[in-house]
Each structure stands twice: as structure tokens, then as C-alpha cells.
Length: 226
Image (cartoon, rainbow, N blue to C red; front, top):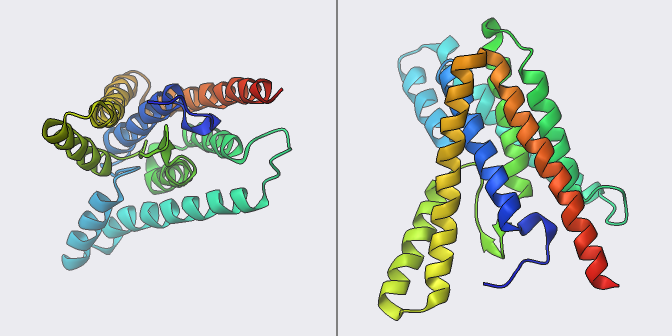
């Protein structure tokens, strides 16, 4: 598998982002009334169930995070359109910075405002899922697992059928990202037990690490051009 030349597609950055993705979902679910930060399919399912039961207030807990997720995707696109490749930050790097700052703000929102906290967390997830779509040229999500599981299993069966090492490498990459997501969820739950709503500060710190990593990757990329 060739090393990625795009600083936003490196394996090490994908690992960090996948851990952050799992952390956010565990945080919102365990600490903020059972709402998913990333898994909007689950939120939509619960939205439909509570709408059918005419539980309008409960339904709103799931509706607003879904809308915030969509707004996060839109903002990431706006950042991409408005970005200047010669500027201080790459547009994806700026997206990570915004995401980290938003999550830092979430840590100061009290438990009686969980809908706002979940909406902001989902907003951050929307930014991430739109900004980082690939690792080593392979379409991979760092905030959800269903697509990764499909691709991992497809490549594994292709390897068993064709014996092509590239298929095995891709399969392991997808399964590895899923594992990192699960590890992030484990870490997130542990910190929720220790820090309650402040636990999301750890995820914010993880994203700041990703932000710094992208500076390093950019310097390497520019050095290779010389």
C-alpha cells in the first residue's frame, strides 16, 4: 500500500480521528441522555419512534442533533470553498480546529441543556465526517462504522477469492479503523465515569493533537517538493 501524499489521508491521522469519533459517540450516549453524536441513523430511528408515540419533547432531543450534523457538513463545505491553499492552515486543518473548539465549549454545558450539548457535538461530527473521507486513497469514515464494516468484509472476501495482498491490506485498514473507533468509545466511557460532562475535553485534546499532526505532515509534504 503506497504512502499517502495527502496530509489528511495518513493512517496515523486516521487513527487519531477514529478514536475521537468513538469517544464522541460514547460521550453523547452515556453522558447526554442516550443520543448518538455520530450514528444519525439511530437518532432518526428514535425520532420516528417518539413521533409515533406523540412524545414531541423527547423527539426534539433526536431531531436537533440530526439537523446540527447536517449543518456541520455544510460548514465543512463552506470552509473548503473559501479556503486558500497557500494560507497558514489547510482547510481540513481549520475544520479540525473548529471541531476541537466546539467540543471544548460543550464541556461547559450543564446536564439540563443536553439537547444543546448533543447538537453541538453532532455539529462537530458533521464537520469531521465531511472533511476526512479517505485514508491512503480509500473511502473511510472516522465517525461511523457501518460503511467501514461493509468495505472491510468485502475486501476480505475478495482476498480469500483472489489471494491479492492489496485486498487483505485494505481489509485490515478498514478493520483497524473500526477497532480504533471502539477503543475511542472505551476511553470515552471511562472518562465520562471520571469527569462527567467535562470528559469531552479529552476528545477536544485528541483533536488538537490531530491539528498539530497536520502541521508536521504539511512540512514533510512541502519538503518533498523541494
